[in-house]
Image (cartoon, rainbow, N blue to C red; front, side, top):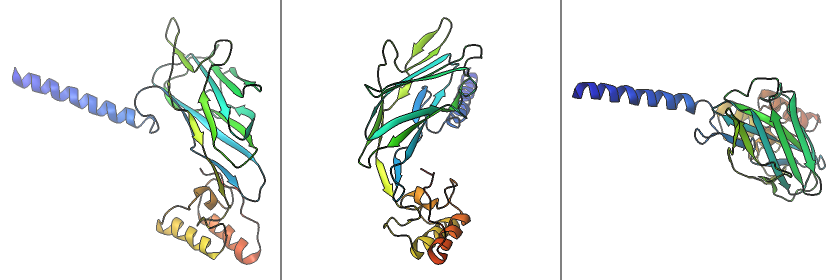
Length: 249
């Protein structure tokens, strides 16, 4: 009898172990199995020499059951002006009904996604949308928090039959504005041979990342590799094109 109990206990522990391993690999940003809504970055980057520019933040979500509707109302604060929302390439891109509504008087943005003719949103992890802003000043921070959007909208996922809503795990975002000089891998506000050597050591020798990693993406292709080093050599020694704002955050 004792042997049977031990065998059963061993099987149960094995199932729990492998289940944990499977779930842990689904969404490294999710702090547990609770459904979550998160932002894709922790700062906005302002490139010196390019004027006040457009900034973007991605919104991601994780759900471990089917979702029949999503409502995300955000309160926006800080030196930005709202521009637009894009669902392109997101998990809800194929839905016919995705919507945005911006209240200019209160700086509130309502984002919604509802499968109507489509199947419910399957369990998984990925993008919900990208929110685009115009940066009006370099003093921060910029904030995004959940809010109530009249007449009845609050942060919620909808599931079940009959449908019920629940609030996913969410933490409001506080995003500092980081001022950087494109190509300045060392963070000293100069672009010279020292930055070239810094990138060489980073790309080929596993040295630390640039002080502001986005500054190392010299050609703006969203990666840091040999092409960025060549780009910087041409700029420093041959009067080539200036480094451009990077896209790595």
